[in-house]
Amino acid sequence: MADTSGARGKRATWNATHLPDLTGRTAVITGANSGIGFAAAQALAGAGAHVVLAVRDLARGGAAAARVSGSTEVRRLDLADLDSVREFAAGWDRPLDLLVNNAGVMMLPEQRTRQGFEMQFGTNHLGHFALTNLLLPYVTGRVVTVSSGAHRMGDKVIHFEDVNLRGTYSPTRAYAQSKLANLLFTLELQRRLAEAGSGVRALAAHPGWAATNLQSRASNPLLRAAMLVGNRFLAQDDKGGALPTLYAATQDLPGASYVGPDGLGEGRGAPTLVGRSAAASDPAAARRLWTLSEELTGVRWPLAAPVR
Image (tube, rainbow, N blue to C red; front, side):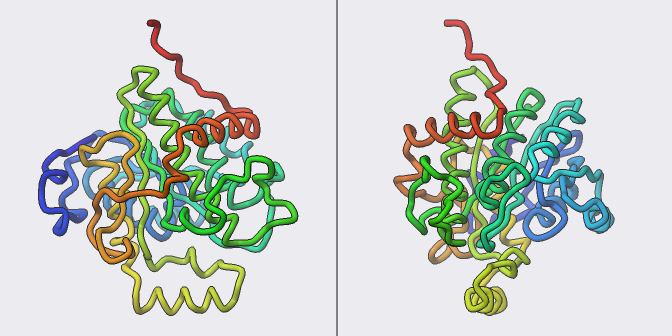
């Protein structure tokens, strides 16, 4: 699912019109009914892909799909409920070229998933961890996981002894941990894919500051107001925010690459390869997180390593 011309061309001019022909390809995008997920769905379907909108609310997903020009379908997926994740995966029975782990929640008041995990870690990381491993036997191309520059915020660590942050919860700390987990997950997923001799690639992307409804759910009213002002005057739109995801999904990039905007502070701009924190580059932490995630979700690595 790669097009090397975009990777060699001028990144400053790269946009969704440079997508390769994706006719015959299938993509699953979580949280595709709004924001950058919807913008990515529009772009991929416009390039010929069959796009599956994996959403919690089928009515909203159907309304979103009706606004996409191209081949789509809508399937229910609640990442805050591992039973829903298993049900979605059990209903999948065909090759999957691209899985985009896009859905997320941001800076919420303290809440729990159906299985009792802290909501941001449980939704943004554990739900996608389980979904990816359950679908991986069908994936033929790439897994792109959406992280955030916020992985550099908070404590800059995974709280392995208490990932649910009981007694130490703050919306920012929890969100930062979940976004750090996205990058460590991508790092370890790529290592495992390479060790298994798989041609599938795992990459990560972040949208910069994109004006979506995600910021409107922040628990702190002052922070929420500041974000809404920033959305209006500083942010790029959802189509601009989707470009790093689309770039990671279609350009000829190495596994474990991280893509974000090329502008000031990676807030906006054309997609390019960007750096990550030292904590997000720690292979030992990535392996430890993987082991913990298997224990918490009950979902195991599905691919065997090659016989040596």
